Image (cartoon, rainbow, N blue to C red; front, side, top):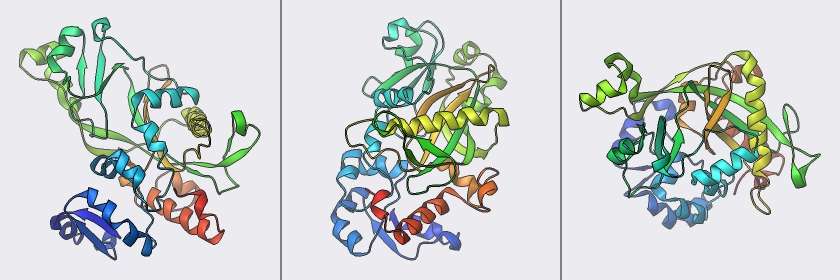
Length: 326
């Protein structure tokens, strides 16, 4: 079933018949989904959330939507706060860019990020407090991070708590000594961003500002990528720690379920810095609808979407559906 706002969206899908849903629900506003909760349940709908749905529906509305959802919707509470994200990721053993709490203390390049899934819109670089004041929207919630030089890679993982084979995540704390489930690396991408990707052709940041130009970080596309093999063990170590730590976020936490993305920078010292996590399917998985060099090793043509469907089907067959939905 496809859920969309606006008739043009349904018409667009006819350009790709293989992706056209069997049934559509057309809405004027995503928040109308709350009124359809009983109807969804009658149709045995399982919602697969993505960033835009959570953004448009609203985090609180999404948590209160009484419809089975793939994954642990409560984890999105931790994803939605950069402070909680940092606590979670650092507990999982990830190294993160430093945070500048007071903008008066900016003494080198920093990146200022706004809350929410906005595709990089509004992010900006500042060298000092004056730069910061000139560009900041004080009405928005923001975080100031050191600007880390390196290559950005977005690592698409999948965690299946019902699978007992493969790379097993080792529990920590109250779950120490337990295998929590199977961790898989499905794919990896990097982002095309407008207009920062082309700025280097015009000179330094100072030169650009003399021309009244500011770099922006609006995501316009995604490119498939593989990283050097020697980095993969550390990538799995970070992902395993992130999943294990998710079971200890709060009392009774069900942990990270299904797809998630570690958003990273690799420095010239071959060190990972994790600057964010997306606890759901991400747009960066779009280049891999037919599989990736990583997922093909385990099974040909395995995309993130297909892996979600496989997880649901196997859970139904094993009478463990409650283990992967919330």
